[in-house]
Length: 404
Ligand SMILES: *[C@@H]1O[C@H](CO)[C@@H](O)[C@H](O)[C@H]1NC(C)=O
Ligand SMILES: *[C@@H]1O[C@H](CO)[C@@H](O)[C@H](O)[C@H]1NC(C)=O
Ligand SMILES: *[C@@H]1O[C@H](CO)[C@@H](O)[C@H](O)[C@H]1NC(C)=O
Ligand SMILES: *[C@@H]1O[C@H](CO)[C@@H](O)[C@H](O)[C@H]1NC(C)=O
Image 1 (cartoon, rainbow, N blue to C red):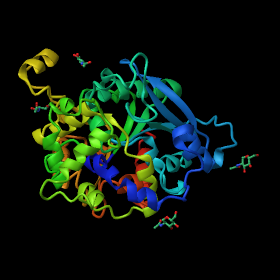
Image 2 (cartoon, helix red, strand yellow; image 1 turned 45 degrees about the horizontal axis):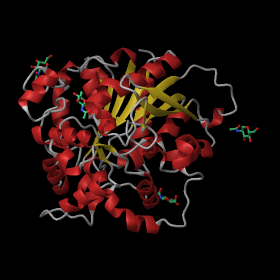
Image 3 (tube, rainbow, N blue to C red; image 1 turned 60 degrees about the horizontal axis):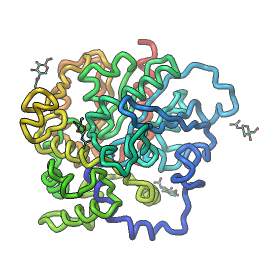
Image 4 (cartoon, rainbow, N blue to C red; image 1 turned 30 degrees about the vertical axis):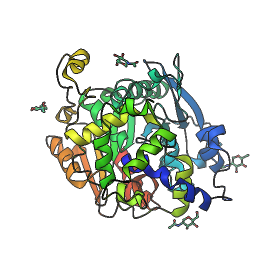
């Protein structure tokens, strides 16, 4: 989710963790019991832990909430529309379930008659398995969001489509929007897709100008793997923590007030939710993925991973520069809902403007754009008023597509 913010949020962990000692918000320990048991079933919903294997061997975990709380004792025979919910970078599916249940997007969708599927990206705690590679093997971490576009999303969509026989609605936040836009621009997923809601959309990142973000983006270059000696980027692990701490000595970087200075000033986070967030996130990703995201910041274009050497790019792509994802190629009749916040430092209003510009040929009646002046990046996932401001409009948007 929160791009650079989360990368550094763990610096706050010690005091936050102390603040929340003795408070047990979750009935079960998510590290042992999984997301369904810790955060869904406890609230009276059905939930099933599932797994999907990608063509390149990653075993991803997926939670299905097939119906609302009121229907929990019914057979569930009515046909419902599926929704896949995709989180951003450095967090996992749990991030959608940290507020009280009546404020959480997956449960709100289930109560509104949707069949909800929560995705967990490769490398995060419940998606750290592979048919042949162990996470301790550097080859396990040899991917960026290009591979999430090429392998993870198609595997998840194929699975949900095969299980439900229905076209799919999608909700993505932050990197969950980037990978969706990139996929749609290549014509992937669109045949199985009904509509997509994109929150805090990330496609261009040129204006992401918070001090730590810019320093981090400059630092995450191809050579970083040698610097770390570890292709896993675990913000809670020592090499990454030392790296982030070193960034804090750059002028203008205030590491004592990270969350607002990185994500923008979130208007609407409850401190008890922030405590839970800090206990559950951030989650690891690959260093190569961080490098790829940093390239998006530096280069201002949406392109495949740049090996930063023409000969390597030629080896991988047959061209000296990596191919672009051209967002103008997203099918113009695909129903899209885009919501962005006036205080979002990661999904800057000017960058969203560029995104909307590349969608200017989109069918007017297929594009809904919402602007929330006070919202920053994390409000979209954990805001205590997100139900009224964002999630109810998403439900209404999905319902408008029912008859089309
Ligand atoms: C479902 O059934 C259980 C056991 O019979 C009962 O305790 C619970 O209140 C029921 N829930 C609903 C929403 O009807
Ligand atoms: C990483 O994957 C690429 C193909 O995408 C391959 O060319 C390269 O050899 C792999 N590197 C490692 C260290 O596994
Ligand atoms: C924040 O969370 C606490 C504890 O769950 C709750 O009592 C309070 O009403 C919440 N505040 C808002 C604005 O939702
Ligand atoms: C993207 O595609 C559109 C139309 O398909 C084309 O006009 C435009 O030149 C392309 N942009 C780039 C950067 O290739």
